[in-house]
Length: 364
Ligand code: NAD
Ligand code: GLY
Image 1: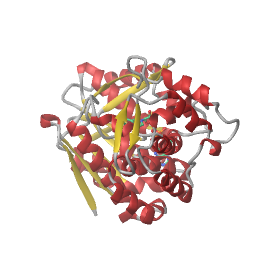
Image 2: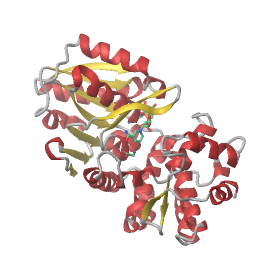
Image 3: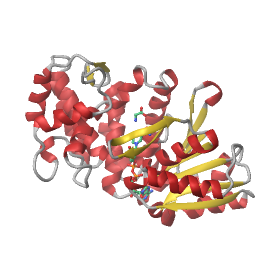
Image 4: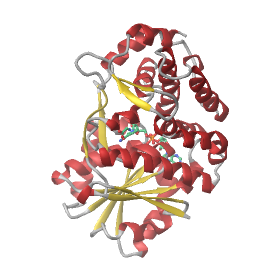
């Protein structure tokens, strides 16, 4: 059982394949793009768990894989990580007709996508995401980046993959906390543009998180379909794509205020941030408070944090969070951009939000 979703971008269109057991038949999906030696870039956690079936599938099909195993963690998404990776790729004689495979979470996908984009002015790459977050979000849409001391994801480019292969069976080995963090991005899709999907998640999300293959395939495929449609209409985020940042302005501020530490994963920040965005929408009279309450209730039911008070350790102050938002890259002409909602499933972008309302939501 697998699903295929097309990202329609003219001659840069590509397919996202979603299903259980796709790694073992990845050569079939990758062979139209593979030439000569194919570097397979991954991190050491993923290498131990999921590299072998991919290497076996490629080898059986006569494709020569070259595994490149990097250290896990955000630190790898850096200039030093980029230098090391591009050096290895150049030593492997990757040329412009070749293909580079990214096997891992968003860290590997973002780094490999960027390296592929700049290597010899652009080499094709394939995304094989192995975290829920990367399957429903980061592997789709062509945003690639590294972190710099000035902030996360500030050096990067748009470079679309040639194919995305999301094998939901790889999620069986993902720590529960990481799985839940990815789920925050899934419920975000419901809140931003599909109230019926949110209804379905309320009834079936826990089943998916318990590993039910049909439910997991549905949540990954549906999320990818929603993102693919938005990216096809607004690849460069000049408008609608910004809706994908629902909960992210608050979420990034919470991540920054907690030092991008283990206290709060990105997805956990998005979970709390989405509740805050819905609370702000209610405060501004745009949507009923019951929507925010219902959304928070579902997050809590599956085990995600839903309020600032759920973050372990000292509570970040409202003014610290507002200052962090002012440094966020979504600031344009000195004004904060928020994604708000006119009820669940109806997000829109606003640059006209009174700071008092933001402060009040952050202090509640
Ligand atoms: P990650 O890549 O760090 O993976 C999380 C952890 O899970 C790592 O320790 C990794 O080794 C491990 N792991 C990965 N797959 C596993 C598996 N199947 N089993 C067991 N362990 C596994 O983190 P992530 O949450 O996937 O991605 C976060 C990154 O994605 C951030 O850098 C963020 O900026 C980026 N991101 C990018 C976009 C985009 O559009 N490009 C969107 C959202 C997030
Ligand atoms: N993660 C937001 C985007 O891809 O635009």
